[in-house]
Image 1 (cartoon, rainbow, N blue to C red):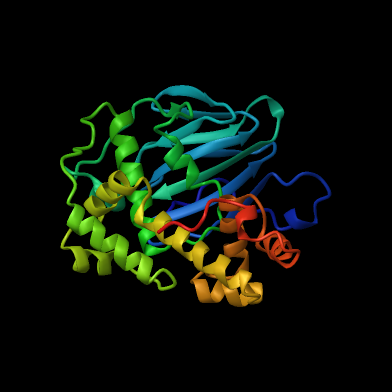
Image 2 (tube, rainbow, N blue to C red):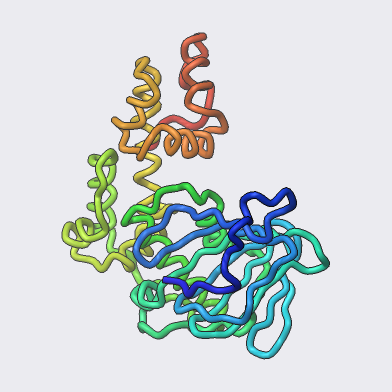
Amino acid sequence: MRQKVGPPATAGLERSCGPQPIVVRPGTGAPGVERVEVRLSGWGYQPHQHDTYGIGITLAGVQVFGYRGQRHLCLPGQLHILHPGETHDGAAAGGHDLLYRIVYLAPELVSGAMTDRSLPFVAAPVQALSRATRSIAGFLADLDEPVSDLRRTDIAVAAADVLSMLAAQHAPDRGGIDMTAVGLAREYLAAHANEQTSAAALEKLTGMDRFMLTRQFRRAFGVSPDRYRTSRRLDLARVAIELGVPLAQAAFQAGFADQSHMTRQFKRAYGLTPGRYATAITLGLGSRAVGPPPSK
């Protein structure tokens, strides 16, 4: 999906005692979605192009890059947004190490989620982290989080809406909510939380385009279909843990990819690991010791 750039890797790089010039940690992805974490130390990219959108967040250091005839700085906590086909370079500023994460999105994935199918162009490549852009940054918070079909649709919708807004185009058409359709989707996801329900299955069930369904579902219930399903999986996992089911088995029964996947989601939702929760249950603290009661 991305064009390989920069000088070829040095054969003895792994044996070097000093800092590595570039370290890349790939994350999980899906068709049209690629996520990586990059650390640069005294090395920079040569001018190059991607055939995708690149949306990244600087975690440490300062990123300096040339884009559309100007030099830009991206500070920690800021996003940088690169349009497909635009030449740019990139390096750490001030001689300090740079750490950033970036998601590469296929243009057809973004255009598919646009109401008018036209690709948005964001003129200012550096954007402050705001309420609007946090949804994009959230997809980079955990690179190991599996990208299911529903998650992929959620990413596309969030990216399309944020890029459209930053491009000063029309706001997404909110319109009405088809409560019958979103209600059907919600009931199905609750009843089949441990299954790998696809966006296509929900389209068939509701008769609604997957992108429109994701938007309306979020407006109706405050979360995306993917996040709603994760919450129901956590409900299943909690019940299993309370019954003394081993953690790996609880993760499998609830529909998580593996125990580590369940652990990350559990800690994010309740503030402690499943293992600590199981210990609390054993000690008689009860399920009311943490978090809200399972949602219906």
